[in-house]
Length: 201
Image (spheres, rainbow, N blue to C red):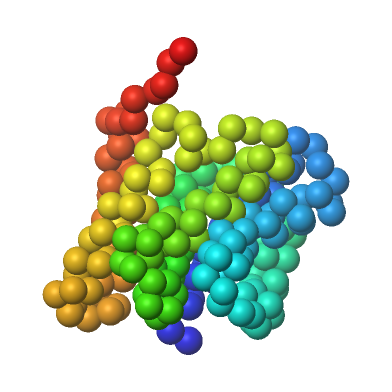
């Protein structure tokens, strides 16, 4: 099992938990929670593959993704109170997840000869669109449209990844450096309450 595949499954698991928690907060039933957790976990990657024409999409050709999502939903229902106490840990894994999904999206786009700038957009889609679908289904304003720095961290990480790739840095080293950059960037923004200007009417 490759490092990026393992991290991909971990990110999928955490995103499934994130979606299920959002559904639980809206008092959805078990099916509604599973559906929300499912689309949160696979929404970004599916949209990316549809745009790129990359078939079959990852979760259709690998049953492990469905298994991990199911485990995430069940774990959330059984241990919701405990999970809520681990918000900081989940935040860290969520940030790792968006970092890994960003890189996976970029790599897939580059493998199809997509322009590097557009590849970063595909990486961004991979990382954040599942959350956009989750928030939309739960009738919330998507996180990337709020003040918190989220998508920008993915873009900064994507640019760093391409730069290190241009320098022919070892792929595994590049992955870890980029993910750490995204984590640190997002933590600094939250710690010092940094945000983009809000459009006011």
